[in-house]
Length: 331
Ligand SMILES: Nc1ncnc2c1ncn2[C@@H]1O[C@H](COP(=O)(O)OP(=O)(O)OP(=O)(O)O)[C@@H](O)[C@H]1O
Ligand code: SF4
Ligand SMILES: [Mg+2]
Image 1 (cartoon, rainbow, N blue to C red):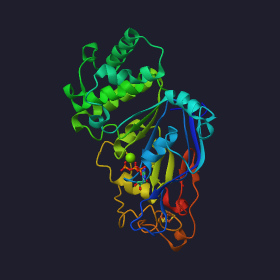
Image 2: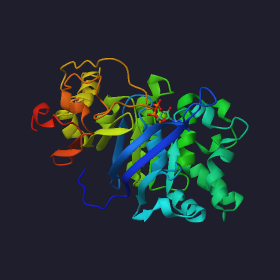
Image 3: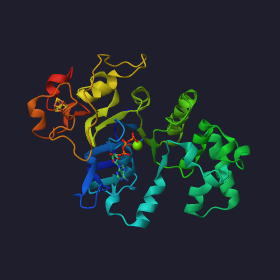
Image 4: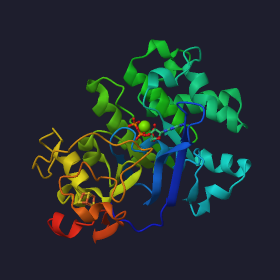
């Protein structure tokens, strides 16, 4: 998509750390650096992908964009308003425009509540609607997600996994948000319904002009549905920008390894198998210099001297690697 608008959401130098539980009473306090100095921009109507291995900070980053995660430092702008300086009332107001759908629809829906209770909850919290108005709005939204008015008084246990996720989507969209976080929205579902749910999300995005932040382990899906993407490793951005350009010309050795592991042969991307060494290090004590040190097939002695800055290697394509000039086709 063409980018002509101002960003809907902008993060500037976000840092988030979590204290780690002590193993014994006099142990020094330790911290997990879940998100380190992350800056990004998400544009209206785009699908912005977040990829990286488990524990790299994807969900923490997503919660940060929603103003749900306390940050150590940095700024979060939603429509030019800084969420980090808002009071509770202001944050509650702005958060009506931001919603989330969860990975696991089985545990995110209260089994004792009817579909109407679940989907109407945001309307009840907002207030100002009669019961009849809420039933009409919920019935309308159920039709949008492929369910029906007849489902209003049924309970989650009556539905399959894919249908449960449709209920979760209806709840997230009932207030017509501008921004929706989808944190692994199909990974808990049967493979046979992945495409249906993803197609539904894409249709709803177009119809309601919603901006998505889409977290996924599946790079083939990211390539298919995302406009721009951020590749994270141990809380830091490794590569960032336009999906087409990054998949055509991945520069960072980590992105190359992730892309080379895609099974789906319909995806057009470099196929040269790039194997990584070792395991992901502890986020409590990440490697000095580049965080990818120790696993990188291209590592050289200078890599541990300092953290590589994000450099623009082509339009809307940024890479954090000191060897970027020799690693990309076009760089
Ligand atoms: N509330 C918390 N308290 C302590 N540590 C936390 C907390 N939430 C996340 N972490 C740690 O922060 C790091 C990033 O976690 P996060 O959940 O954001 O990763 P993720 O990329 O979403 O992983 P996954 O793919 O498994 O969902 C991890 O090391 C995790 O253990
Ligand atoms: S800076 Fe060095 S260790 Fe880091 S990705 Fe580049 S080559 Fe690999
Ligand atoms: Mg997560």
